[in-house]
Length: 351
Image (cartoon, rainbow, N blue to C red; front, side, top):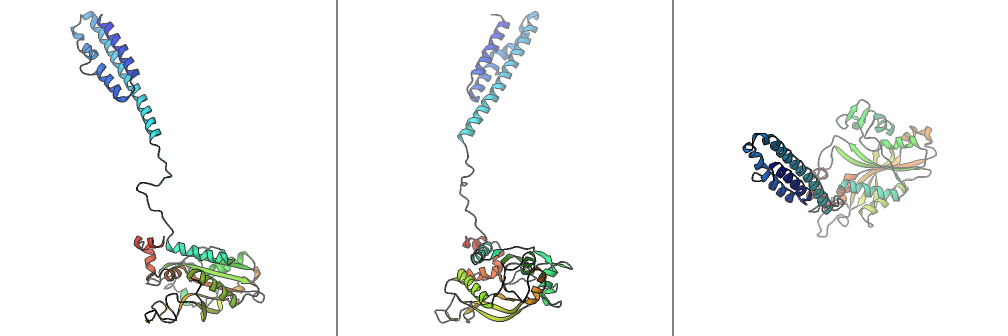
């Protein structure tokens, strides 16, 4: 067999072997057998110089074409085999992304403040109130003026309140929604307004940002007794069925009469612990202050009279509580700032 015929035969054998390879490892063996340093085809190329001059050109050209053809066939087959192997691996290693990771990541839960807020909302929704929300940056008009705050009231000072402009503040309470809500609908109205509020305070019982729930009920023949009954239902839902509430006279610019609301202490009996010591939670009084409230001042209705709030025809009550304070009492947290320090040892107790 002539050298040219042998080259043609090697090319045919190599391409056939490549096409029949069933894996990348087998394909590599074929490549080495036909194109490796000791393979016949490369040796023929190296020995071209030993041939008669008239055979060198055709033999060299044929050997190069055979080598390139086998190399191209190897690369094409390798791409086919790698694609098939990848497809097989993907089919065999399907990952269900809906399954938990390994190791499993503990499920998250609401922050204690969010959990208490939702618990408060659920109580008042059950009492027939609806939830409303308002802007955190509000006009001085809604935050102070329309709520009957005198022009020289201390909370208007920059030492107490964050001003964004002369007539815009970060709301100091969620009470601005009283007037905003009454502007949007005529009576009757029964709403609670949860949300963030801001004041220049920072100590064990105050934080610059905190959360409040404002309540407003306006209808005909609403009385202070209705307020007391509503808050009694709230206190028993949050702190236990044995709780009682009492109202003490107080002053707020936007309610008249105004009251502080206390709940009977859930840590002691009449101010004393079982060992006879004075209760540190209620300081021996048997009562714990939880919120401020009162009957809506007629002056506030004066700002929304044209919306159907005639103070000679309707009455209402309002109340405001700090969500942190409710959580503080419910879960016996000693310092409000702990709610915001993001210490997981503390937060994971309330999952």
